[in-house]
Length: 83
Image 1: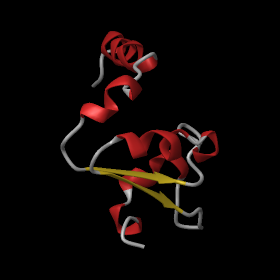
Image 2 (image 1 turned 45 degrees about the horizontal axis):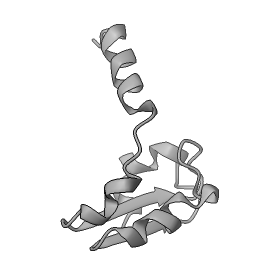
Image 3 (image 1 turned 60 degrees about the vertical axis):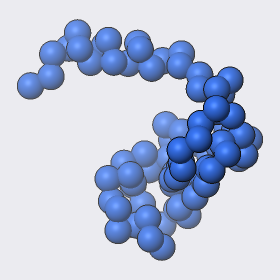
């Protein structure tokens, strides 16, 4: 069971986090996957298209919306990642 205070702390800790200034320092390979119907991180904002080129070994994949995608929850269905 999740304590409400822990959940609030987690949300508050990530609410204004901005990794952009340090992306050029990332040396590990990064694979960022999003789905076209994600309402939490909507691809229409263009953030990943703009920021991923700063990651030296970064790759961004956008999964097209389909009957199988589930918006932000698409990350929970790895079978969709290989399409």
